[in-house]
Image 1 (cartoon, rainbow, N blue to C red):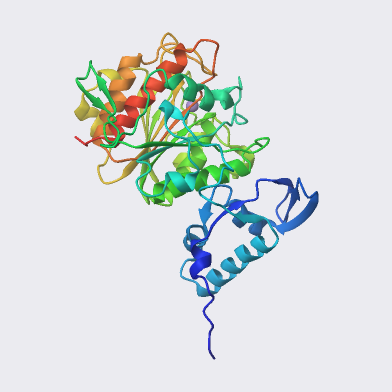
Image 2: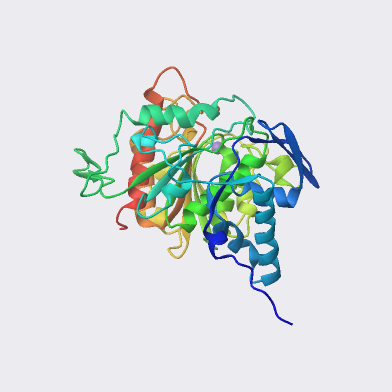
Length: 412
Ligand SMILES: [Mn+2]
């Protein structure tokens, strides 16, 4: 028997994207109905095929989508390439032209970084770190509004630091307090927001975020996600664990976010008050260290041997040796910053503020130490609730700037 190799040479490298005129009309376990808004016709897909289709929500090469899924099975590889070809024939996937103008480009990203399509941001030496907006706040138990934080922080952060890339590389900015250049040589890109017309609770935008974080990590860039409420840390961690088989999580927060889930399915149950329970339950997460915890607990959180807690501001008075002794050096860490870890006098624009938190200086020092001393796989900042005052935006952006600088600078 002769086996004909499928002609995948050109196909594998093709850069495809979901036709921007398509919308998901309905989806259940078996069937996803897609609606072409311009041509007003409907296509029914098996939901598994729709998952493959949605992997192209951002421009991706066929190879980068298919190869991680095939697990050395030539039959599965052939079937997936055939599925992608079918999606192209049906017009559900269209070629993406890097020089086209289908996506917003230009400046105006975080710290005035260029806004690029993901495929461009991950190409060549376009970036060392990639900002990803996640304007999602369907997982809150109290005040919504953090969906507006990505654009709020893009706007306010430009007042703090204006990213530039010169012929000699990005100069960063001189910090007269620390006496050195921040972010010197580091290339910044912003890929805009993970978007759906309407974000549904724990819906398809989580899979998109996981894919974008995963693609960014696979390309060796640091993903920096701007939430959004704290439930978005779950898809971020899922995106990182594909590339880091052992992950630690460094968690800044006033709250443990450790409420007991009511069911065993995150799709139904995940919210910003139980997100760390889901994260700790992930097999690849070996350690979660929580800093700033001060919410009264009723009842007391059940212990986990993966979990360590520095209550209130105790981490600010601990020695570096005490803090680092808990963090094995052979694993990578995700840093998740809930801005309510800060005291409300430093930052009040958040959904569930609590007195007794870190000052700005304490938090910057803590994150600086942790991020300089360990390998950082990803960063997210969550629960910023934009207010009329831009001061809190500047405080949050400043914490992020210094954290990102420490995470991408020389290790000590
Ligand atoms: Mn939180």
